[in-house]
Length: 86
Image 1 (spheres, rainbow, N blue to C red):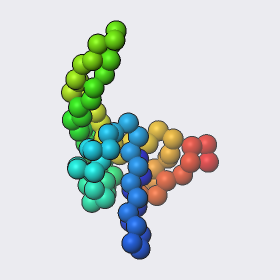
Image 2 (cartoon, rainbow, N blue to C red):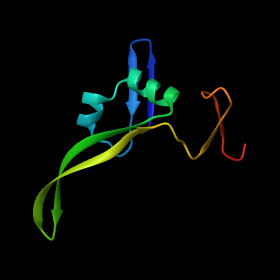
Image 3 (cartoon, helix red, strand yellow):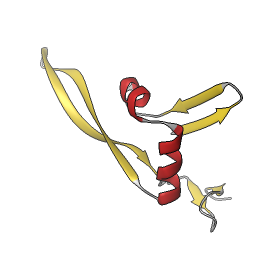
Image 4 (cartoon, rainbow, N blue to C red):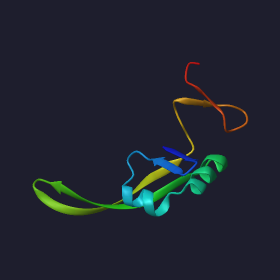
């Protein structure tokens, strides 16, 4: 997950989360709140899937934002990180 704001630009990337959920629910302010407060945010998503050539509508709940990153080491200030095996 990635979110940054610059001069006239706002970039956000979330893996495994539908674009409609990202546009509707996930903002930079919410991203910062989750990181600082060490929270987990779940979002409800609807999709159409095919099983054995039959179409079904599925409603699923996924973790859309999470403060844990298994490939980074978080320093004591809670913001700065180092790469794994630094």
